Length: 614
Image (cartoon, rainbow, N blue to C red; front, side, top):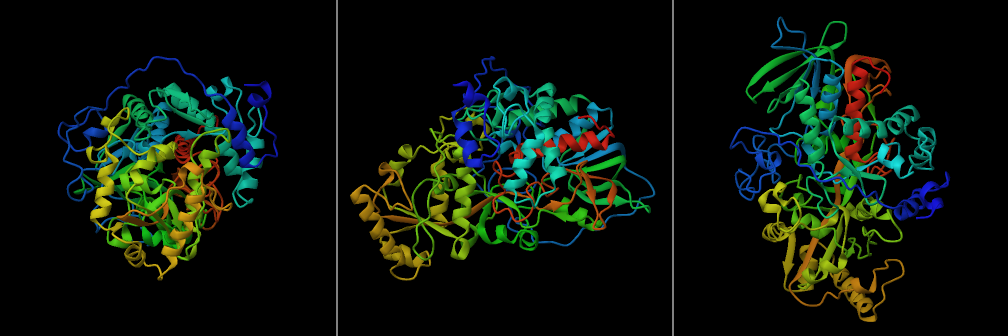
């Protein structure tokens, strides 16, 4: 690599210019030997073992039978009565009880990526801390993230002399660039805090025991023992390490203990929570210093989406966050008068399969075989018959433009008449997959992937999810294009005419200039059976949430701090300003979604303990 490419990115670059430069940057070759992380032991036989002990033969109920409940945390369907939620009403606070069931300095709500960091930071700073979690596993939805996106400031990136928009790292320059990308609708003080703290958070996590490596594109860091070919539960190594640190330093974790309300005293201060311990007994937990809300957003609450993020409610066909995300913490904040920030902003991947339209479930595991199949470069049109341009996720000379392909394609698939797109292919579809070669989280799961033991058995072969979709008629399998056209809801002639034109392009070996597929991707649709599926965005983050200041304190509608209450992303909002369709920059914010959650928890734990220097 030349010195110029290594060290220089013009400060005026758009994200496209940045991506080209970042892609040509060399990957860090971390040569440390792989060291297995300490396993998190759970009660033998309790469902959730697969997510915790890394065993080759996980002990859990078959994940391909029945609907999962809140008790077992399998990544499949949820009870129809519970997912998605459909309640946008504020949850009122409780008064201070005559006596408390538990006492501590700080209560952390949620043991996902943000909650684990908040808990770890609190106990590191000497606070007596209790962390409540509604499920029975650690790491929450953060486990399924592939990599942490971060634009600079970490030690690993410094070693490679990488930063954006220029080297050396400058949080002010990054803030200025990001504010332009967000159309100046975001809070610059909040954006500066994210820019300044991102690298420090990553380094702090390393000091706590997380073994990082640079990704092949240096905007990414990932756990050392993970590989690009393995995108399933990759961040589990990081969340396991943070749990080990937090629990080892004295944090008390209460699993299967969902928070139900905030407790507010007569002066308006938040002094604790109520929680449903073991899903049965209501308990009052006193937080002498602060309550930190880090239980994610509301991807799985349709009423909240319709009210606060209408573009996601219309354009997203599914959510890939199967653990929680029903918005209880957001509603608790509303119940104590919190303001809202980031209206109509969310983050989505492409290929949200419309199970709900066929009576199926809204929240699906990202690596479900049908979801991944829908993300391949098949012939795609809107309901008028117009083509949808595909965005390639392969890393080539164009570099990390592949990073943006995921969100950009989601926008293309959502921003069409009716907010749905349609993929169509014929009986030879499986023959084309290897040649498509899609990367990042678009890879289909096969049983030979590294660390496949982390994956619920039903998802270890992508064919299972496709078979499920065909059986549910979500993926429609028909003997003629005319039948497929009618059953997908097209007017007569729209689909058949579009396919005829596509087949002409395939025969010529040259696509239309507006939708340029590589010649080797031009596969005619001519041999039955024919397949079609309705798709939209695949929601992975709500960017609208509780309003906070740059010290992570929740703000009321009066503009004042609500004393004793802090929120990390994505319970908090505003990290991308307003009206961000898919939450750029970098797959959801200035930091990628999981790194934003990590950073938010770290900052919450810092400021809730009255520490200014993080």
